[in-house]
Image (cartoon, rainbow, N blue to C red; front, top):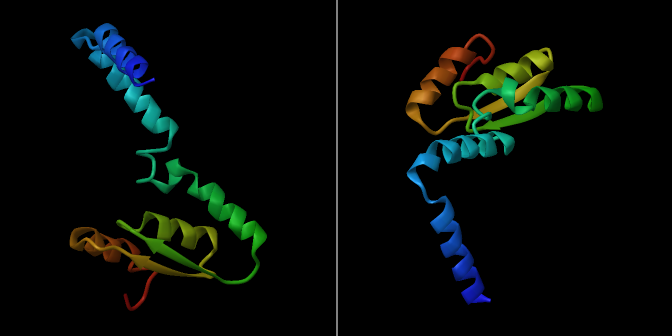
Length: 114
């Protein structure tokens, strides 16, 4: 079985390891990553999080507590606050100093005492 895999790998490399095919494989890689939703997470509008928040809102009545771990600059927290009409408590965590400063700046009108 190992010999067959080794031969198949060698044949694959022999056929497809060509410089002129690199642009094709780069595009295929980009499409694959987007298909797995990599690269869309930086924006809640592209990642399906709006659908999730609205679904939670329709299923749960009353106030809700959310944890935004890796909050970046606060896009998700602001979106959640908007969806739940301020009837939620959001705890945002961001370990990097630069992003944390931006998080505080972007959410200061919503958060008090951060």
